[in-house]
Length: 221
Image (cartoon, rainbow, N blue to C red; front, side, top):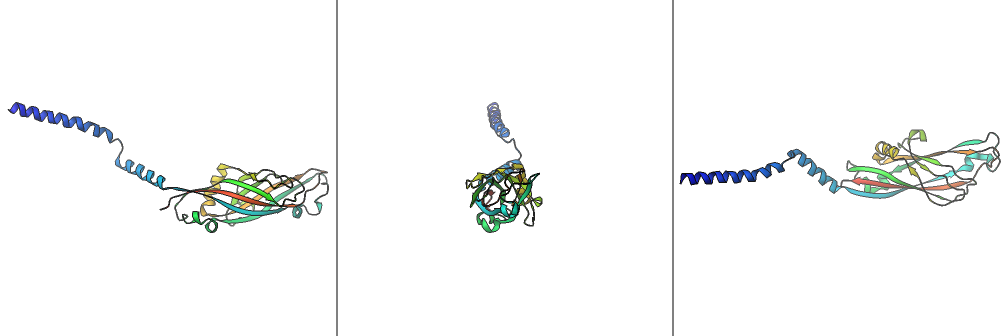
């Protein structure tokens, strides 16, 4: 009888040990790592993407810059004229309430992933050269106060066809962390008009509409 009881005890111990081994193998991560992974997954699942368009408008009057020389042949050695526009204030706190309501620490990322420029009332007598877009602080006075984030391709004289600006992703990321994060910044435009000797100095003006494609990721806590 004692031998039989010892056999049952040993058999129960063997079965318990066999069942315990897989459980020990499953626990491969510390509890804190598991908690962090679960918390991170839950937060990522709660993130919401918001896509909006912010529109700004500018008028570039080339005649005002070239003055009496407009329409006349450029004298030697030609003309080099800076084309700059005063900063335009962009305040997403007022214009984008769907994003602004998360501004109190719940905006995960905010970027401008598309810039479309649409000319209208285009009376330019020569093609508008490529121009650069800068973002800077609300106190910016000139393009030197900001970061060049994109380049507008040349716009044909008289054209009213929209063009896409080429965005510098690295520069946009830098500007985003410095200026966009506050939801208030300045947008500035700058370029250079070059007229060869003997070519007609351009005049006229053009209205430019800028559609900024905003992409925000927020956590609605």
